Length: 100
Image 1 (cartoon, rainbow, N blue to C red):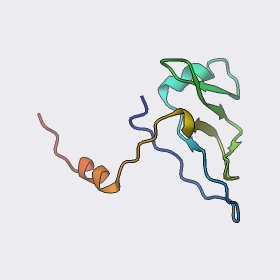
Image 2: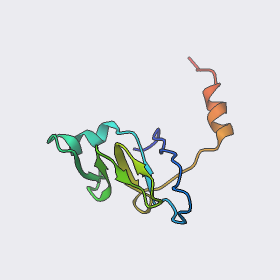
Image 3: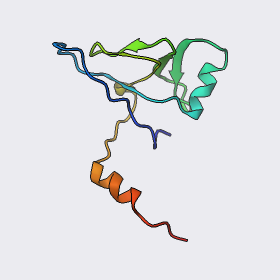
């Protein structure tokens, strides 16, 4: 479901010791149902089990580290499985030849 999502990298506010507890992503296809009613903000629900996994706000939202992200499509790290892909794996896959 989140296979190709890349979280937003943002700078923390100077002097802020809080850790980021959210991942900010670009809106993806399954999120469209949350935005059908022309609302500017709302909940993001898991498309399979309907549990709340985050929120969206077109006017922006603050990360727990203090940075404001506009627009904000925010997933709570405690609600999703986060898998990091190493750079060398990304580069290897990028240059693989397609098999016919």
